[in-house]
Image (cartoon, rainbow, N blue to C red; front, side):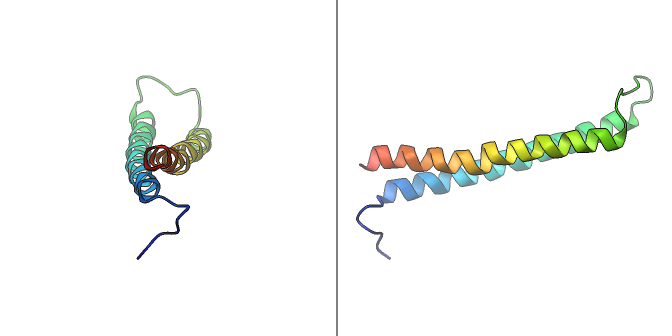
Amino acid sequence: MSLPAFLPQAAVVGGLLGLSMGLIGHGLVSRVIGAWLDAAERDEEEPVSMTRAELERWATGFRRMVWAGTVILFPVAGFLIGLAIGG
């Protein structure tokens, strides 16, 4: 498979590396948020100022922000770095 002349191979590899790192980062952050929500629900000594529904809504917004930051921006940054390196 040959790539078009205007698309260096380094840019494609950089984008794929950025995507893989973004997916790994997103998976880790999602697990941490889930564990944090579970811990906040189980902790009876220190009451949480928000209900479970409010925490879920906040976590959903945070997950979307993390998704945009890791799975969208990392591949774009990897592509641009690869484009700069590959010329």
